[in-house]
Length: 417
Image 1: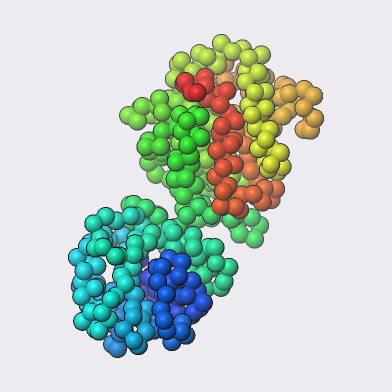
Image 2: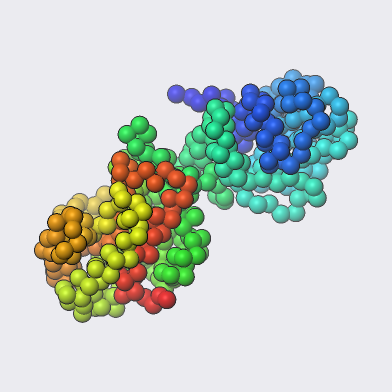
């Protein structure tokens, strides 16, 4: 079903239409937009302001093919006494200082002596004329999300839809239209691939900039993650953060990495030790012996305790997977999987009931894998039906805490503070 804002074909025109429609329909929202973001207030009553898009004052609406003509702004907010705000929106195309100057000239030619030009773009642009009010779409989105009114919600939701489409079409090369606002999935809002992929990118963008991960685990914020986020027909999307000692030119499968997986029923933050992990780390894990591996597990659980208290629905997780690939690009066949609550490994830890044999079997399968493709993961699973904290905009802190709790394992792979 087409969205109410889908009347245009170009992304710039669609998102501008969403914002301008919301501002026109809700004049209180318009007032807050001018006050909070533009930092200008008209002397005229909000109800008497004119809100236009894709046309000039006192002219008819243009056909979409004519909208890119030089000097035609994307939006106007003005009164009958010579006050105006001119809006230029960019999503894919590059904004130039020349466009802003043409809009200033156009407004002055139409007897608006001191026009205010607002540029809205995915990234911070440089070299714009002095006085330009420069907004990022992600900041506009965050502002809309804070406003609990119908038209603000509609506009914010459309920015999410538009961003998901652009990501899937690989058109959004820089910046973002939205910000991470939590994981929304539950029984009333089922997981879907396009939204999961969009949210995954936003979450990892925040986590790359998390100073605790950079300092505490050696995350390299400049290193790329997966080359392509696939899984349209699957029930999960995932990506990873690279640790600093991992060579960009070397496959990430040679090093432990921080994996974030958004799945149909839960989100997981795990430290993955891949099958082909470098020989030095594998040797350290083998030299630990089963007793030493248990001690590492106990240390991880101790580190995670504050997180488990704060987010009572979270589950400390171990997973070991043996798999094979029929071809380079095919979905793997899972031959064996062992998965359990880490608390089962520690006698006397209360619920769940201890069963140390799970950890023993998982470790033994790693040490004596006999050529099988076997990877292990430590981390935390956050189920949507148990962890309402995931819906908060600061949910990325939960994922960071889960990874930081796994520091005893990460230390076996490289030096961290």
